[in-house]
Amino acid sequence: MSIRIRLCSSMLAAWFAGALPAAGAESLTVFVDQATITKLPDKVTTLVVGNPLIADVSIQAGGMMVVTGKGYGSTNVVALDRGGNVLSEKQIRVEGPRDNVMVVYRGSDRETYSCLPRCERRITLGDAPDYFGATLTQSTTRTGQAQGSSQQR
Image 1: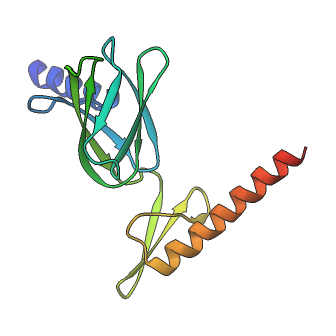
Image 2: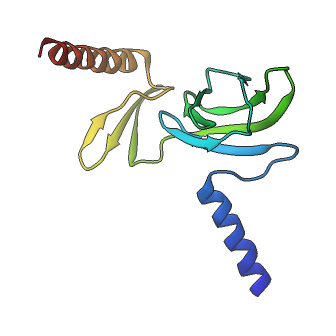
């Protein structure tokens, strides 16, 4: 029984750290529209992303890598040094939102709402084009208005 508890504890610790080992490469899980930070090996100068539609990565000061979930699925990121040598490789799994999400189907059309605490429209991959476009337009307009207001001060 104690071996089972230790195994479960190890798995939970790995899960909370966001990195479960995969065959041949480390694995990192991030949620769509969210970011996570992980440490890179020393002397990384280039990051290569297998599919930038799934995840976006950037090198930050102090050897940190920011991974942002862009779309559902799995891809990889390879870290290279100045000479083109592979320093590390990570599998990146991007999963759906983890907040309180409600999905409404109207025939084959889908709409997604974030319910924290009231249900509000959310822009989610896979939503019906009209719903997605209208929600994106409203969000973009609001952001533009907010940026315009801050620049006038």
